Image (tube, rainbow, N blue to C red):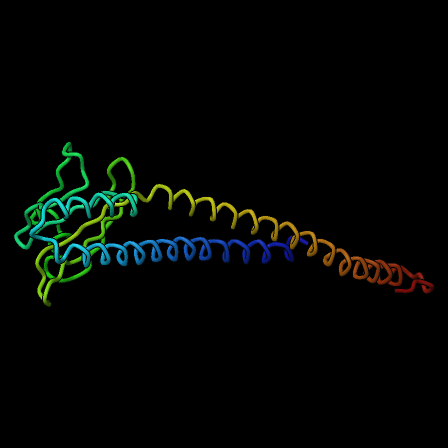
Length: 201
């Protein structure tokens, strides 16, 4: 029976690993796409307000609340012009921040780093009259997302274990139903070989 059960176990493990990895990849892709879309909306709102520092501060503070992260803007030279930070931590200039630097080049850029927690940084260009005049960057914690992914993976593994247990049970029953007649046939053959002409399979 072990020969029948082993393939079932191998197939279950072979399916669980890629499914778990695929789940994590899809969730991460969705989070990154949503963050980029939200940052672009904020950047478009700020594009016509670059000469109004108070308005930019208001925009960054409102965006920080709605995006649940830290938001800051830089001008075309990489100088900080608005931030949702309270002043205790100053975001780096663009020259020290490759993600912001890429956004100043007109591209959407994203990256992950660890600061005691997993953080997703998303930078988008601020465009006015077809020209990149600055960049907006959002830093969002991924802890909640990672926790949710872990919970989903655990649930997926639980389902896989349950399916494996049911599969093993069915395989055990099938193996028994196949092995029983074979044993009976073998016993009859041995009895016939021993001279019992009445033995029947």
